[in-house]
Length: 364
Ligand code: ADP
Ligand code: GN1
Ligand code: MG
Image 1 (cartoon, rainbow, N blue to C red):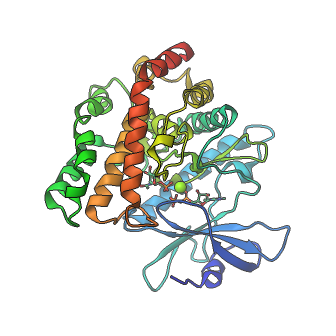
Image 2 (cartoon, rainbow, N blue to C red; image 1 turned 90 degrees about the horizontal axis):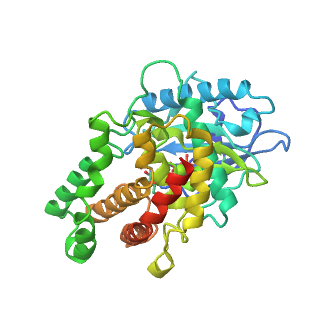
Image 3 (tube, rainbow, N blue to C red; image 1 turned 180 degrees about the vertical axis):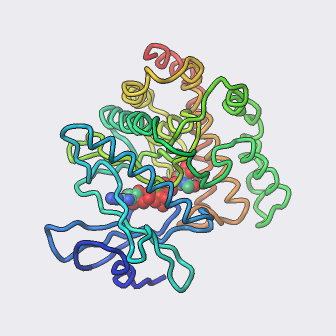
């Protein structure tokens, strides 16, 4: 769809003159554009058409991000040498005084400063990068741990709730809206045989053994930007920052940071969890958080990657059965291919589970 990016850009109170706008990044949810400005010394921008089918309440979503970025910036101001413009997302207000606009076609738009000279990875090729990613998420959680005010708005209710995800999955299997169920019986079986054991984190939460904290909830590695020297720079994609268990962030990051292949890999033989990348990410993450986590949180850290990789497999397969209404896809079997990849990764984690537990035990 062709949008008049120049006109939309000019509704925001940006510093700089529109030069051009192009599709950017590989996110699965919004339509993201990089806007370059004419003046070389001025910032570029990220302009996003927000997915309001996924995020039903844009004002509350934006309010969350305003609160989170204001708090993060106040923390960074207290740290000498911080590069505040690159270490924290900055929303650009629009000319109506809000941090988003809606156009005549019912589209919602927002804009951030483009974080310059960053590196972004879909696949991680070295323990150093994994370590830095872990540090970035640990620091992010630590900085938000004392954010004042009411709990954040739940932008997607039940987001990582595996009981609810399995309910939706089973309902779609019964409905079979696109006639695809017959082609995925093997994958359905792989999911159902693991369903019970996946409920443990929710159970621990209900029993009061692990606390809800402010978590990111979408820590795939391309949402963690590294700097030009591949050091932790900025955690982006703040749409799902809300109350959650730390296992969700740890698990989602390992799912991507320690996968030897990309999420989209169709050759399953290339997909494995790399235990060295797991170890390095864990070291980075725990270097920032080990003092604050309770014993039960630590005990179940090694399980978290199995849970979240499984959860994403359930979500990809549900979307495939539903006829591809949620994630952006680039070919007909894309969601199925992704679900298969995630299931393979779960199996690789199961094989290495004792080693994962040993590593976490040593670090905690
Ligand atoms: P989605 O929810 O669709 O993943 P994101 O907010 O993660 O949307 O943005 C998509 C991609 O755009 C990111 O993975 C990243 O590559 C890039 N991006 C987003 N915000 C910025 C920013 N402020 N500076 C630089 N790149 C960004
Ligand atoms: C989506 O927005 P993005 O592309 O960073 C999804 C995550 C999934 C991920 C799978 C709001 O992340 O939950 O883990 O795709 N985000 C949302 O790649 O659903
Ligand atoms: Mg993203």
